[in-house]
Length: 308
Image 1 (cartoon, helix red, strand yellow):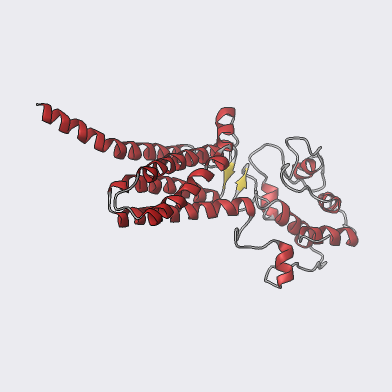
Image 2 (cartoon, rainbow, N blue to C red):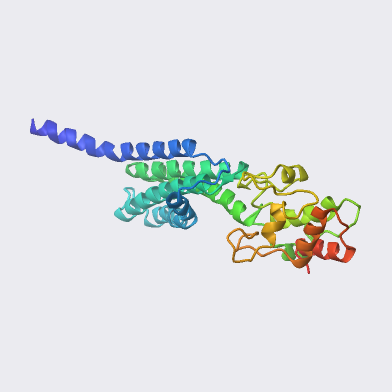
């Protein structure tokens, strides 16, 4: 009887990690489905703030996922050491927490878009593979390294998409505009041309440079897209119109860029460079349907391209 009880408890103890990993990741997947990244701003202050810690929480497990296989190569033990087991557990738990906070961040802070969805589910997948790497610690060294490599690969993909959401497409291999211009690479600073289409010639380049990174197809904050004239006319998730031809007071885009920079509704956000005087003036004149002086239009365009 004693031997049977001992065998039972050993069996339970053996299956606890697997059960915990499967259960927690199922909860994560269900949360991702239930708490959709649909662009709506929601009122749960606690979960909204918790979501803001997503960016802080992801760095530790991402770094440790790289360190664990390096230790495996260095130590060359057929059986996983205590240090590797502890680090792997931290990786699995930390990745799960970071992914869950990412779900909260997107759902409660008004994010949506193709890249947001890709990053969100990439984070969920990273949690699953980090858990798999932890569960594989009782396997041979080759199998451990293989699962760790898969976890690093999935995490790298999710991190790459997240990096592009924050730092624009091509990150981290895309140089800044000035460096790209000096290198003579494609995407060098364009030349201002007045074709008679004010939106295409002046306004669209300004919005592309300053607004579309948060309000484009890949990342849509507050259900507002600013990557086309039709999208501006449609507006976002609020009742306030974004663009009302001929009426500055009823054009939220103009109101927000003219607020006090300390105001929470000021755009672009506080961590971004504000629009220049030429750009603000150009947008205002365009909304009013007035002609933009050529020197103002040229300055606004060149500033949007990264020049002065």
